[in-house]
Length: 173
Image (spheres, rainbow, N blue to C red):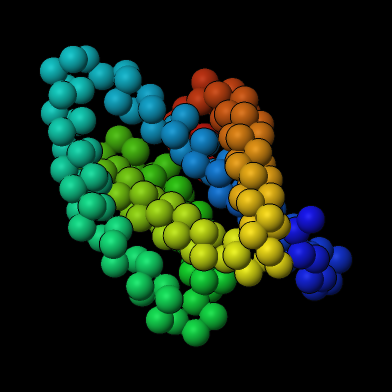
């Protein structure tokens, strides 16, 4: 079993699991909201927007991703702090995306969302060993987090799809 280190009413793993479920659910909701911005375009407009999306999100991301891990490791108590900063940052980015979804600001904000998502992922991966007391516990913790992620995404997509019928802005908010 995953090493229980209680703090309040929850173990460290339970707190990580709750956080992970919420972050994965947020990813699923954002994916639903942003999918319609590209899928509802005609073919010519879609090519330009997809190219712009790739240039502003994927290309810089490949340069920034290797810098995230070492930056987190240098900060005292950095992993937990980074998870908190990523969560708050993603909340702010979602609200900004909702207000700028029909503008070109969508793309740099999408880059911000991707960077925050990756930052959370790196931090979460670094935190998982601290909630396990053995290699077997580490495998179990990672397995449980995988199942939690799948369930959270499935549960989040339904309400997101319903909100999407109103508008992508409603889904993001």
